[in-house]
Image (cartoon, rainbow, N blue to C red; front, top):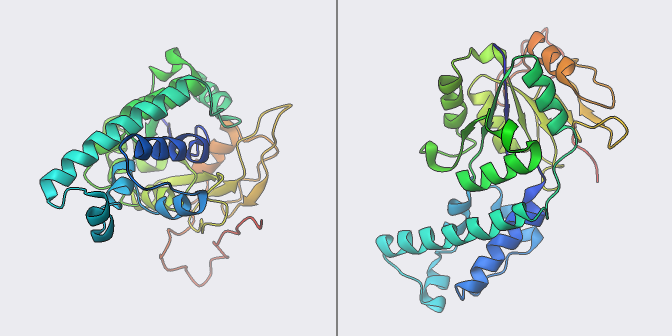
Length: 280
């Protein structure tokens, strides 16, 4: 039985700019931390996988001294856990209030896949309560209950490490050739390809300029009939989607050979397998 595995942030909803960033900054303010991440600074923080890991970058010698933060490892771990719990609560509340809209096409593709008997999963580095809140917001509580949810600290290494996708293969009991992953970032792509999985990329607000070499298909979004249309940015696997990416296109992804993974040698007789990046 094939499986469709989604990342959460940037894929189910474009949550980073309007959800996570304000939640981080609100948490910093509540704890009296003299830090407010701008959109540009947060774009750099997104290179670090995981919210707790991003918060941990605050423990510089300068900020520890100036803000009176704990200097010992145990104290920092305790402070980090408290910050992250509060940040997760702030973020989850914003999702429940509908501040961040779902991305186009996700709910439609989920229903198509479910009707065809595909397994459904989410694999994310975000905290599990945050992931479940977004998932229910996008597909509804009943459909969300049919998903395998892998999130947060369920694996010791975050993306781009492939651990979470290797765990997804184990939990779902599927062969790598029967899985399509939908990601929005290079870190997510690297994690999926590192686990031997084919990957479709729907770029998000922070990832349009990233290198997606190794993806089977790169589009602006999945698209919806009568709504936002998918625009193809790269199609190295020859999927040839129209303005709406649906289950038929995902099945073609499975039928085509996966492009060489990032860093893999390209056979001499092979055509180009690089992606283009949207120019903005």
